Length: 267
Image (tube, rainbow, N blue to C red; front, side, top):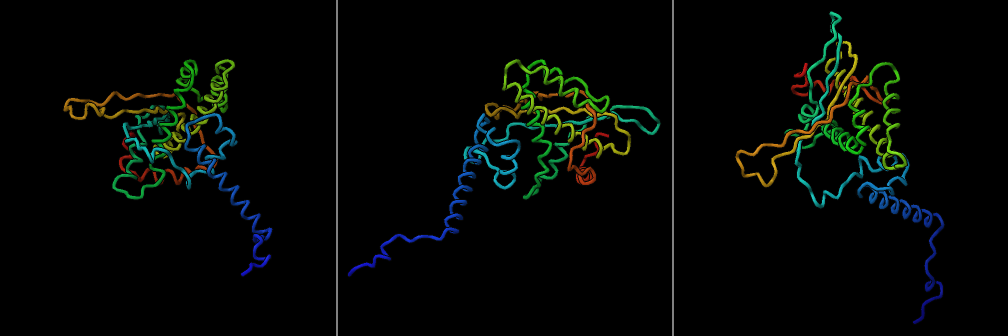
């Protein structure tokens, strides 16, 4: 029995199908590469992808971490406290008490099998802010503690000061400063929304925030009845002007934020 020469030849796929296959291969290769960059520790290779393209691609659909395979239990509580300087109806200026939005946002997690992503907004912001602050040099950290709120150019003045203190001939210092300025803007914008939600009925002249973390009792002391949690470590900013970012909805934020239990306790 013989096989016809036509059947012996490899099947030739149409051009359009080969193009589709080629595009699928490219997309698969890009996805694998992007996932590798996303889950790998921070490195220079990640900067191959410009701006926030990598984050925008991975989040929220493909976000993941190697901690899925080697989970690390939560070993501390984050806080992000906010206060404001306000002018009351009598024209007197006063400083409000500190409030911690993180504790309020936790209300969205307790007894909720499907908590919203917004429940971790303040918690993650506190973590990002502290990590980026620790990477600044000593002079820059001292500058962050100063107040910047007068005039419309307070943001630029703070930016110029931090940039002028970048370690000479250090690309790492330059990148770390840029990363902190992003975190600073996000923190200021978040604190502004919180302040407007809580004290929006009065004139707010400036805001201040501080990010903190308190560790849990060490595992080695878990059976010690007298063991106490470590003292909280807090990074306090100076006073800041109001920051509003594009796309923010103060009305929607205040509606959700003020619905959380105890949110007005700091008034």
